[in-house]
Image (cartoon, rainbow, N blue to C red; front, side, top):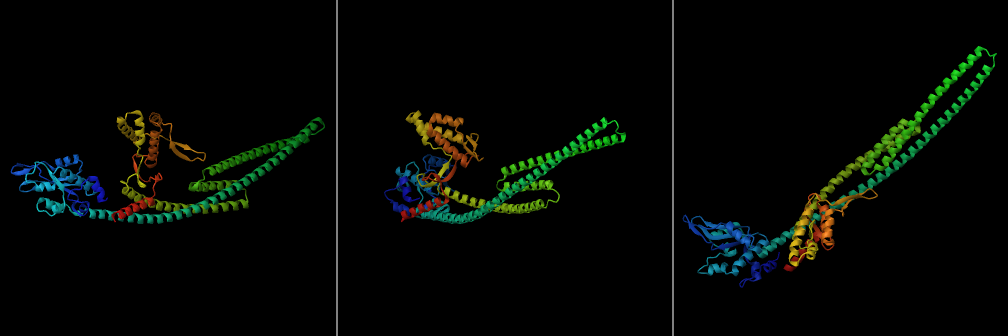
Length: 539
């Protein structure tokens, strides 16, 4: 902060002091004021007066913002009639101290008036402590030397500039280091992404090969059972033909009266054996049907598993599920394979070996991803710390600057002022707009009011959007118009993005020219530019 701006704010130039004199004049730091001629009364042989607390309250009411007031006491005589007023050690404290001195000086109750008057009025005299007060004898000098030291405005200004320069340099070095680390992490992440893409392609190729092999097995099984059914149908027709022949021979035997009993028994025996053979064939047919039905269920189950696998395969979880499904498929294939099917055994062994390799690749990928996540979190934490420092440095920068701090979730009062002017008189508009803005800011802080809804697109991706049918939003739009509605919805979205659970205002480093979140690089560059402008102005 420049001394010229402080001087213009306070209007503190006097007849005897120029700006250059004040710039090099030595003041007691932390900034202190001296109050003299405090009324006292004698009590028990000692002078007493009002407490420093009351004097502090009086000065605070006048806008001088003292930190504390310390009355000076003499152990033998009591209250000395003097008090030291301590102000903030920063530039706002210096402004308050100069305003404090100026107010007494304008009423002719300053330092010069106190020491030049032979008959002092029954009023308080006050001034800002300087070099002569610091080296003075008595209670005032002792207190000032004990609590502070001498410092010129120029030296204070130079000290602040050194601190700012050091902060800028530290932030610049930190940012460069973080950028290098971030680039390194990005390279590793790209490598991991490439490896993951290769693994996914291999997984898809393996699934495709598995599906083709499964279809081939199903076709072979279908052809095999079709062959069995045809053979059984042929045998059944043969038995039916024999049955008809036997029946025809039986009729012929019955017609022939001369046929002997031995031949009749032989025919009956053959008929009984034929019936038994037909019964056995029926049992075989039922067994074959059961086997075919069981095979059909297995094929349906396998088909459902394939469909479920295709739906759930995604990233790491997809790969894990694929491995488990393929293990189950191998068990089904082991159950279904025929004796001596060497080709199927060889295929199963190949798939098992490939599954083992994929499981090992999955473990390596998990370890790499975990390490990258930990490093990325650490890097993000460090970047966030640097961003917080920049936000602190820019907190008092005007919104008219290109880079500054924007309070996310804070309502803009201008739309409320415009709406209030349409409904109220000019005298009431400001007060009503402030009340409305404050009321809606409280609504925004209420976590129970969450006018958002979740929608899902055709690809199954979900996102949260503003619920325009919310009762409160409809009311504010109908009563105050689109401008107030827009201000409320903008603040709502900011609050939901930055602090949906706590619902309080969050400061953010902001690029006001482009209306977006500022980067760390932009913040540091802007800070450097301001520092260079300040340096050129001083020279």
